[in-house]
Length: 218
Ligand code: PRP
Image 1 (spheres, rainbow, N blue to C red):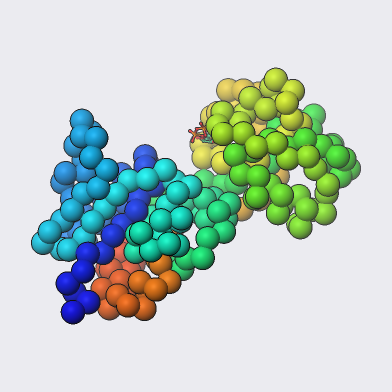
Image 2 (image 1 turned 180 degrees about the horizontal axis):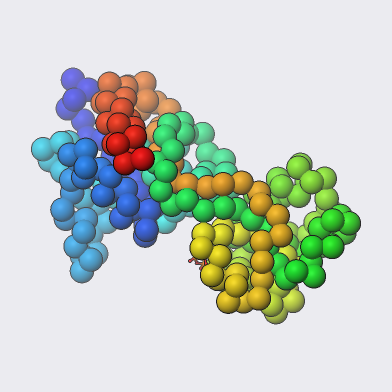
């Protein structure tokens, strides 16, 4: 009976979704329609496999999964840490690798060492708060931004930023550098807690197939 219902996947829009779909294709899960860039459709169905896929903003993916609107999600570890949703994190997909770092001009190094009251701008206020308050025991003023966070120290909004560093080129081109590393990041597969029990066979099969595919690729 559990084979009857659709399994729904929420994928974070952008690079992660493309890479996820490629991996899924390798284990026989396809959804051709989703690749049509001209379409404004939000949800795609593979009738044969009884699966549905939708693309959502990254930070919303754990929300859809926690509430059961999606059974499975693929999202960056950064989003999981920031959103703290009640979901099972079941697999490190190994792509979308990058680092969460404290960055700024070289001159800001000293401010970090001396635990001064500094301003930190970030798209990730919860990660920044946890790092400075709980790990470094440094009181800071956190300012939430929604993107282009590297502007923070340049226009003197903040002393440093907490942000994702992948190639490091955004930092270099703006005269900033990594001052401290917070944690490594990559794409993760997450599962709704009830779905994990009710659809356990299908979901476990999927996890095993993806794991085998990841091992083959390494
Ligand atoms: C992310 C991140 C950095 C950049 C890092 O921004 O916030 O700005 O990528 O990548 P790099 O080390 O390879 O240069 P994103 O492109 O998601 O846009 P945003 O600044 O609007 O968040």
